Image 1 (cartoon, rainbow, N blue to C red):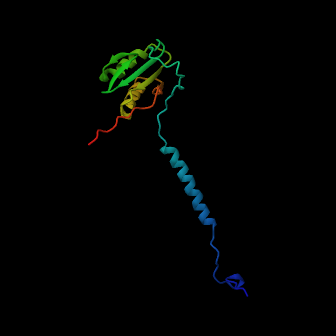
Image 2 (cartoon, rainbow, N blue to C red; image 1 turned 120 degrees about the vertical axis):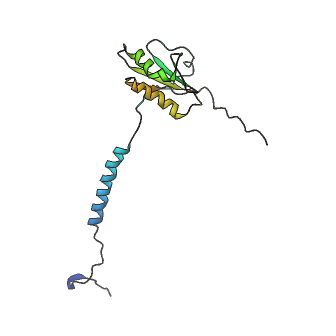
Image 3 (cartoon, rainbow, N blue to C red; image 1 turned 60 degrees about the vertical axis):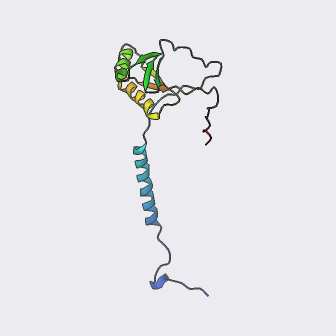
Length: 151
């Protein structure tokens, strides 16, 4: 005993037509893929590989390597030479004016906010430096946590 709905008599059809639903799904997929490419933002930087423990030292950088240190405040030092924040871009422009290789490494102090380091990177880019690398923090030991005072 079976029941046929529709068939040759022209009654109602019990199957859902999937073709329009798949078309809509594919169009939405393409739209989301195109929009995703436009939403991607980032900062293109180079990070040097981590060094071995024996190589980690506080030696001053050589003349070819320029290191911009961002200290709390924010205060800036270029190869250990203090630079006022208002004159950072001009100072970097003067340093890199005669250099063919425009590469700088930005090193941020541990307690800095993300925005302070990004301001230094932006000043470097504004001074026409083509490659900006970030120096990773040292991994000499675990971070220290100060306990909260007892009530």
